[in-house]
Length: 257
Image 1 (spheres, rainbow, N blue to C red):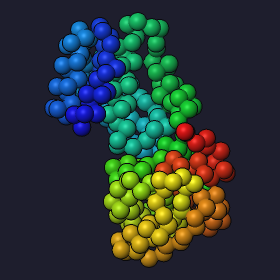
Image 2: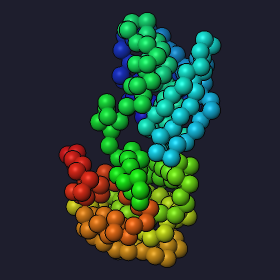
Image 3: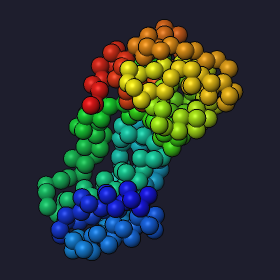
């Protein structure tokens, strides 16, 4: 984590304010040292603002109040999840600081956070493809991301069983990810993106079988896996790799090189 923090600290510019949300001591000291070196003011978001009254909505959004010493500020965001709380706290704190330099009012901030996916071109972050079945896609590809993903969609939908289309790269800890999704899986549909690093169906199947999955379906082609999941007319989640999603032409996602 210290290596990542050190690399992130590289974006700190001379005399430009820095906002930090993580209270990890190791991270804090690395960022603070770099900020001091650059003569940049360091703001610790949780000391300035707090988030209360968190509500998960059935449209897979999230609502909450941000409170500071001066105001309580209602927010609705398309980026739901407990893992997003610190991100929103840091973003709001940064925007609050920027008010001194730009013409930003409350409505600008509320609308910007509400439309963050459209404004930033974010795809496959608990993205709802069909709200009726429902069908959700997400780029979760490690155990931590899968834990946050499942917690969030269960909180929002109150649906505790899903057909899950799953694929993984062979250098990822996908066994731990499978352990996390097992309790929420009706049918596990394993697939293989068209990329050399993708784990084979046989290895995915063997791992899932060892973990106790009972209803495992192997469909190598992601496009066919998605079509199968749709025709099942059962809550459907596709996750595990952006490569998996980009090989489903129905979703019209562009693969990054």
